[in-house]
Image (cartoon, rainbow, N blue to C red; front, side, top):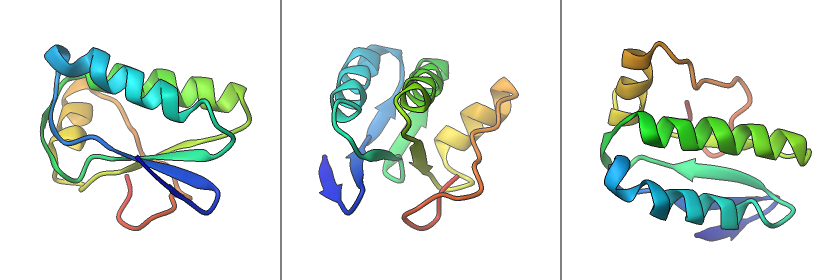
Length: 102
């Protein structure tokens, strides 16, 4: 996890699937413990499933309650966006910091 001006970046790499869901949940929950917005970087993900999507949706709801935001850094043709499309979810926001975000 790295910290930048007004946001933290959490890099989620490799397999973003059920066997690692607890790991990613704990990492994201810890990052939400501060005062900054959060960027979840999935550019190095090799696969993703509904368990990771659920973590992102829950993190965004928690952040919103805290007056903050969770942004995604994910390639549009990457595994996270493919899993979201397959599930009929849109993870896009219009004001994403940090580059090629979804």
